[in-house]
Length: 225
Image (cartoon, rainbow, N blue to C red):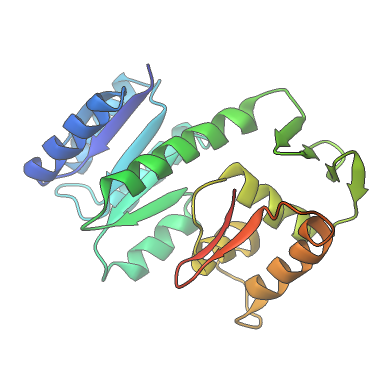
């Protein structure tokens, strides 16, 4: 059973998340302050994922994140943020946060992001070098992609973008999330770079096949499914 730490100072929200995650088959522990979170991570090093509110008493969510990543860089952390926490959210990504969900959130979306980040972490830690999705194979050692046994030549950025979308398949990624994970927040270029590279990928991966795996979700972003 996967173990998740919920770090949220609002006890009502924390309890709702706890009940929903328990119902979905997860084991959960809770912390209500940043200091409690640090103590629990120290005492229980085997969490599979941490849900972390940015605004916490005693120790901020940003400082908790620094501590977590200093102990285990690969442990997935999802920020729970208010809509006006953009600056803190950016800081969190720069320090290694893996994802975010804004309040008030839809639990189905939160659950999907939890599962995607746990799955992504398991894949990244697996010694297996081949990822299979639909009729596509991604070789993480050679940085190659095959579809129906035909090699598809991709640039390194195209490969990184496609790999990111496949790792998070069925989960819509906004342009901002893609920019953060593929290009990084220090990217200073044209605003539509994500759209440009999505078009490159579609031309190479989808154009000659009946089944199109790269899809646009209007007003939200892109998804592979």
